[in-house]
Length: 123
Length: 131
Image (cartoon, rainbow over all chains, first blue to last red; front, side):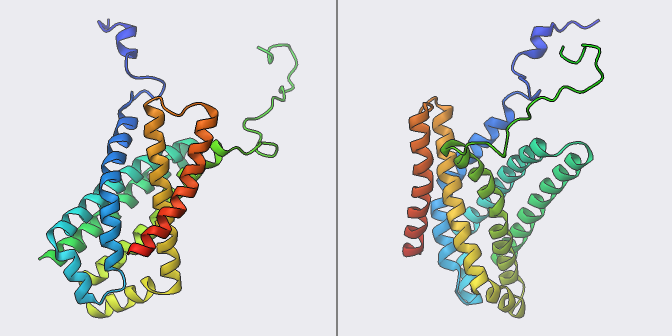
């Protein structure tokens, strides 16, 4: 016998069965990225075309390093979740599972590689 | 149910969304462009992270990555990514407006779609001029 009523189980979950957690994550990460991106685009764009010494010096700057790390981590989570929705829209069965594993792994590999590069430049 | 009429023949129902006869609208184009730009941005991100990794690792590795980055191909990817990021940016802001129950009538939604397309081109040119 279960003590939870049907209504209690349904409240907040909606048709996606996970409530609004996904939508809220995308909203929060979008706002955070919207604040960071204009500054980061300028810093990254200015670093392109420089010599290796200039590029290393640019990303060794604490502000640029921390901002780049934040942009990488937040944007790759935003991508993984957004891309997962596309996979769920168009793929089914095993293809869906494989697609989800692929986009989540790809974003993790890119974020980790970028962080490794930033740490190596900073140290 | 229509199937339960005794006939084994499947009822041929129209399939959504009729891609062959679908009338393209501003709202549908601006919506699919958001998804396309979001995914296409991964090309620019991969190139950018690879270039940064090369800068962290060694001179010969950076020489290779920087040659790709500053080639016509690299410039095409970076300029394309710049437009994609600005489009996705403006389209995302539009979604925040929609979430706040603003601009949901058809006329305003279509105007906002044009604002995303024109605005992203303007911001791309502006960024290229400033940087």
